Image (tube, helix red, strand yellow):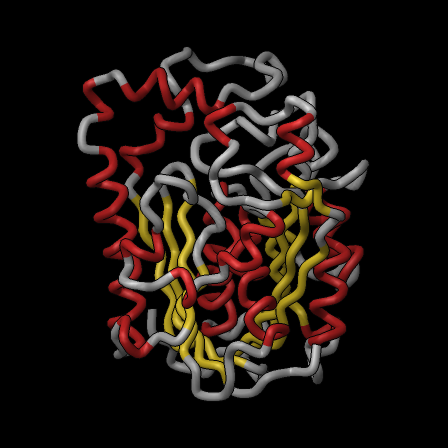
Length: 339
């Protein structure tokens, strides 16, 4: 997607709980052998703080950092999550919106798994570009607490972390300019997260969630054949379109922000796209874990706070979520805020 009007990132923020050492978790018998050598050193684990509460903390900080953007200018709040938000049949986005920008801004929940955060940027970009509002607050927040889920072993190749993130998108000003943003999908891959069991009529029948088991069920079905090739093709297509719309190549990109997953013996998504680990944000990923839908907002904030990007640098943001859906965006750094 190219934009007929300028689009900016006014701020990015996160709120993460204290971390737990992976070695300590292994010693406590929490981590099975398959997840002990993924490269994570520690994982952010919240103690009694729900996902929407973490999203509010991150969202408020994002608004504080968005210099020149007033709360009443924010005409939409998009809240993304991967799991339980503290109550059943409850609009978490309304709570997040009320606690950050007030009672009048519409709040919508997005649950496109780990693609929801960056995907919400693409959706918000269109909303701003159409003239409906001049600013949108994007938040993410999740707590992967037992007994609902076994964060350490629930899925292949990563360990879930708790945390909240926020980002303010503006049509007027910001420290970075969104050059392009794209969405993609391959819906034929959705069964990897569903498995072969029939649909249930009520929630709470599978505790802890058997996500890995669902994938193993599907893996032996004819429908699963060629899944990696389809995943790779959709991811590459989404990213290539973002680069093409920005009229740049991989060689023009200074840093890449990818999902904080796939360490150990697994191939890296950033390697697949042509980047090195040094260009990625794995330095923070190994310290906090996979913050679900918030990895991209956290990663952008991290690059700014570390001073590893400067004016003129191009940053590529890429996300993928079960389903499977994808998003990518090219961002140009205009200046480095003093966060």
